[in-house]
Length: 235
Length: 198
Image 1: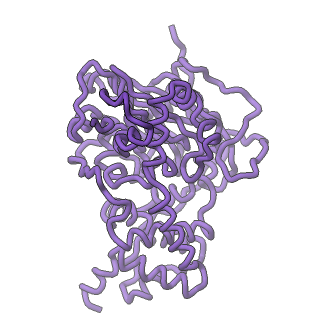
Image 2: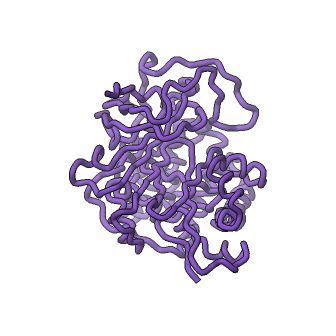
Image 3: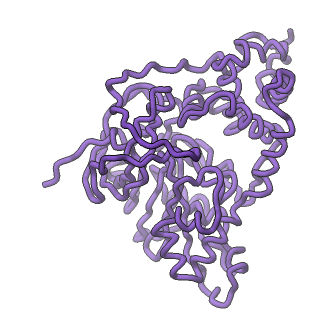
């Protein structure tokens, strides 16, 4: 299996009860509100490519991902990381402003951007770029797979951003639907071009993912990009 | 520098306040734009947009079949657009089939239909567990499904967003679309609850 980043937790054991409140407000604290608003301003001058901001979140250290104020805390951490990486803040500048020790902030602990190996990515294809901002693309080639085909998710993909959750790596499932083609985030997040792909909804039976211990009659659907998938010969 | 001071400098609250001030000072962000954006998301968006679609689908079979076949087309015709709904698929609950939505890798969610996601949806607990033991998770959240009911989990790993069409509660035959929409909760459109009953 590929080296997993901190966010890739689907199916992990050891998590406790879900703290569920049906009447929960959108924001719990004023600072969450500010993070939300500031983030969108920062995105105008930093991460604009599909998947780029998500990859920044995925590169956070475990302590910042899980123990820095939850979802909006992660966003706060990523604001700092992106501003430093894009050169809008000096390294450690916010710590200095706060009179804190250098290295207090989350950007100092984040992983660097991995260098992807180009020939492990699918070829780019020339397609019309829509005028409106969208990740959808119209591909010249037809989808390689059809609804009902048995496919296998790869055991590994190269390091860096991907939409292959570890819990389906190496597992077999059926094509349930074909979504509109999209820019490949594995490539675009790294600034390596769009390399758009057909996207499939793949259904995995509970037993395939979790073995005989699986709950009965459950099916987990994951959207996977065409270049991830391997055909499986059916008897 | 005291230890306490460095401790408070770790808090996301302290850091975002200082960061916003610093960015305003540098001329990189505009505070009024920030305020406007927050207000827009907090007041204009919410589950009522999705609830309207569900209530109409309950009362109009033709609308329901269009919504299930091609939600993008319905949204375009209804002039519903916005964040995180570039491609939407609606999954209908019916006797013997229940659907529930998650995003294990992030916290993707159809913002322009449901508003911003609640904390539990974004929590590591929900994201990790609902793909492994969805029946247990739903039971914990108050939704007991019988064993024969097929449970379909939708993990939002691409840019497709999912909305659950809950079953219409019985005894609601005489309600208007507006009255019906009031029964459609955020949780029922994520799939962790049924629609409210009368």
